[in-house]
Length: 120
Image 1 (tube, helix red, strand yellow):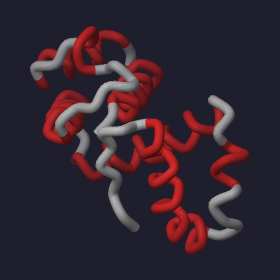
Image 2: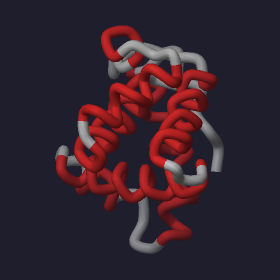
Image 3: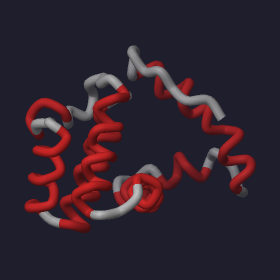
Image 4: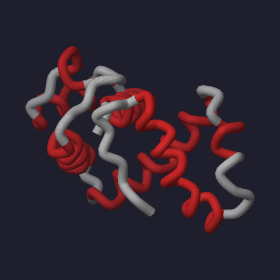
């Protein structure tokens, strides 16, 4: 997984829970901000798992809740950063959108050469 996902998780924690929460989460997960949040660097998926587990523990939320909050935040993050037009091309309804995610990931793989994308 590329660090862009880590970056957005970090951004979510900072904006919704503050620097102190982020510091505790990173310490619990055994992660360093300078090493594990490079947007265009590929990371092992276990690092994201550690980050999510630590977030769950520190914020006293289930991992499922953390993932739901992250999903909402990720959509808003993409909209704030100008990806809304691109996302709209994936479909006018949720079914079409999900069916076209594989195509989006195929295009992203052209730029992210070590990308291992999920399939929908």
